[in-house]
Length: 112
Length: 518
Ligand SMILES: Cc1cc2nc3c(=O)[nH]c(=O)nc-3n(C[C@H](O)[C@H](O)[C@H](O)COP(=O)(O)OP(=O)(O)OC[C@H]3O[C@@H](n4cnc5c(N)ncnc54)[C@H](O)[C@@H]3O)c2cc1C
Image 1 (cartoon, rainbow over the protein chains, first blue to last red):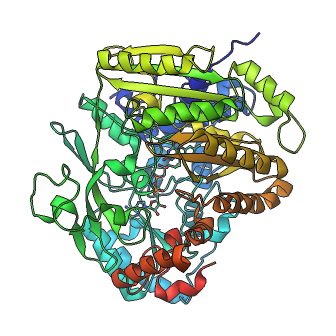
Image 2 (cartoon, rainbow over the protein chains, first blue to last red; image 1 turned 90 degrees about the horizontal axis):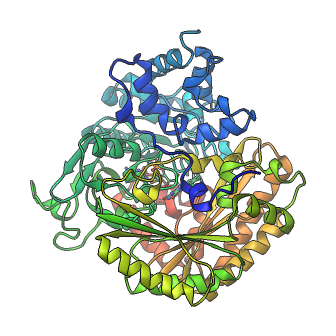
Image 3 (tube, chains in turn red, cyan; image 1 turned 90 degrees about the vertical axis):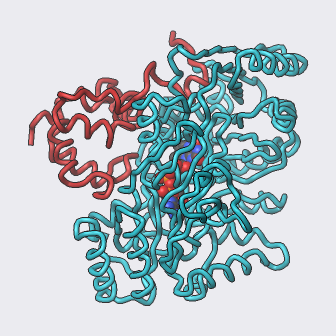
């Protein structure tokens, strides 16, 4: 049997700790801090993207992009600019092409 | 998206205007490719193309904003200012008037923090996450009032009368002093800021003579380039009282009780009473529960509630401040509820030094509520319908019943909440839809219009609306044959003779485009 989850928890609380850019380590690859500040609100702990991706392919392991190894840089770039499902498109004013390339490289672990 | 143009403008005129603006902001910050235009569409809208932008221009400083606005006048080019443009449910980054150029202020990210007074002078690009991180990094004893979608801008949210969930939740009322580029390109400061170098700009709201801050809220009278925000001092303690209400009808007495506590000031936070779908749509998809069209039947609703252990309605009350005061206040509320219901509150206690609960109740920025757009599977979307009611149980119950019946009639799943202010309730209803379901999409417009018409019959107006429905909603404010609209438009024409700033915003059209009112 599944443990009941209280609504006030559901409404606001999905995990024990919130995302904070402060946590980005200084020696991380350049894409990492960029990913945290530009994408982390949805794609790190507690984010909308994590929540949707975890349930959509019915595979919770797909939720955290940083833990995946099946994404190419090209795919990351295209999805960010063109949006997908419930993810809105990200403008160049919000994340420049240069920044997005760094982020895509980081998430794809170097796969073009 | 291929190039779209505002009425009466040719492609070469647009090209000339954008080239002139590029000389101010730099070539990189005029965004005018097909792909750029797509990135300013409203991803959650019923019809994205209806409000497509021609391009975006992204200045870095107030001086650049003023220059761009002057050029817009010279070229008669309509601009649509956004702070971060995450106004999902109300239009995202997209302009009211198709073919406008988005004035994207998201690069303007300066924060000046007055630690002694607990105020922050913010540029529009500062997001809730940015401010939260700034406070953490600098270990400042203040909390941010974050909305359910905190991806956006602190200023942008306050300028659309957005809300958070702490005692400082009415964000627009925490604005204090602005810097604004008027539609002619002149830079003004409001309140005490009108005195050069005044140390009280962000401390006293009114200045001398007329006070204008609210004039720039939900209007098209200026581009805000800086604004002061008051921040809540981190409290010594917090007490949470949470209750699941079993029956639909429990809404009435609980609203009456909370209304009393909001009026007499015992409860300073604006709580929201929400229905069962609020959590279910964030955590699960509809197909997990039901695979037929039409509104969810009662047995499915019962199954959802059972699985999550929730009521028809859920109430979350929060008390902030000194521990002894909170304990006393919570005891009064508990005693009043005990007279109405056998059920006890779930009580949580937090004190300084304990880890924070990662929710807007403690000023954490979040985005996961946006996951509710995936409720139907498919490409999700949502529009918000939010009429303002008097603060009493009868009015809430009556409004709920009519709204619920409309959801049933149009075969949509009810997602409503009642946000309790000191003298009024904002009844926020999310209309969640599936953009890949053509049959459902045909129903959305009629449904929304029926909701507005029901509210108007009771003389309830919306507090905020989607760009597509701004004329509809403005039209319901009809006293003396729409005298306020005439007044708004007289001000508009005086401040913006060329009609370049956000034409049509909040139903206010400049003379030049007035024939476009729908
Ligand atoms: C699931 C979900 C939950 C949500 N929860 C909440 C919530 O709890 N509380 C809440 O308030 N909202 C909520 N929203 C609505 C919305 O997403 C937020 O209010 C968000 O903060 C608005 O986006 P923004 O801050 O980027 O503002 P923007 O989109 O930048 O601005 C909002 C509007 O203000 C005007 N404007 C912006 N900047 C300027 C400027 N500098 N000068 C002049 N005019 C300007 C523009 O017309 C713009 O359209 C929710 C939305 C969804 C989908």
